[in-house]
Length: 389
Image (tube, rainbow, N blue to C red; front, side, top):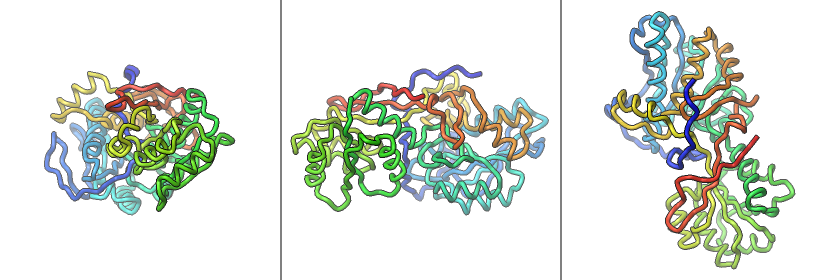
C-alpha cells in the first residue's frame, strides 16, 4: 500500500469548479505524450495478450488547461503500464477517446462505448462534461466512471466516483470554517449570476440555514448597490460565488465602510482578483480543495517515463486508474462487478486516501479542503485544513 501523502501544498490545488477554455491546438509528442483525435487503444508490454478487459479513458485532445490534460492521461497510462508489466498473461487495454472539445461530451462517449461493448469502466478528468447527460450515458451502458475532478459530477450521481471533493463538500467546509473559525452567524452570499455555479450556491444556502443573511447578484448591477445591500443586511461575513468581479465587489464593500471577512473560491484564485481589489486584497480568504503532494518516488518514475515533471493531476489520475486495476486484479471482470468494487473501495493512493459515499462523492473524512488567508503579496503556500467528518 503506498504511503499516505505528505501535507498538500497550494501548488497542487485544482479549482473545485473548472471552466474550460477550448483551444484549437494540436500537440506533437510533448514529453512522450501525443495529442490526437478519435479512438486509440493503449496497452502495456505484450498487450496482444489481452484477456478481454477494457477500460475507456475520455478526455481532451487539447484545451485551455492543456497542462492538466496531459498530466491526467499520462498518469493513467503509467498505472496501466505498470499493471500490464506484472500481468503478462492478462493485459488491460485502455481505449482513449480523445476529442478536441474536452472529451467530446456524452455523444462521443456513447460512440466510443458502442464501438467497444466490452468496456467495463470509464476514467475521466470530468472537465467540461455535463453531469446529467454523462451520468445517463453511463447508466444506459451500465457503466461506472472514476473522475479526478470534483466539480458538479459528484452531486447525487451514484455511478461517478470522484477523487476530488465535490462542490457540495467544499460548500459544507466553507460554512464550517465561517461558523467555527470566523464565528460568523450572518453570512451574505454574492452571486455573479452564472448558472454553472448554482449547485454550489444552493449548497452554501443549505448549510448556512438560519445564518444565511441574504443573496444578491452582481449581474447587471452597480457594485456600490450590491455593497449597500450587504451593509443593510447586517452580515458579519461575505462569500462570493463565481469566477469574476470578486475584486471589484470587495473594493465596493470596503468603500462602504465594511471590514467584515470576504471569502470565495474560484473568483479569488483569479489573478484579476488582486488587481481589481487593490490593497483590499490583504486578508481575503480563499477556500480550496487540494490533492496531496505526490511522493518523490512517483515524481521520479513519472519523469523517467515521460521526460517531464508530473503536474497537479498526474498522481490523482494514477490513483484513479489503480482503483479500477485493483478491482480487475481481484477478479472483477464485468461492469457491474467493477462498479460495486469502486463503490466499496477504501484505500490510500499517491495523492490521497479514498472512499466514497453512496452518491459517489469523496467521503468527508477523506476530503482535503483548506482555508488560505491572503498576505500583502499573495495567498500563502499552505493553509489551515478544515476538518470534516
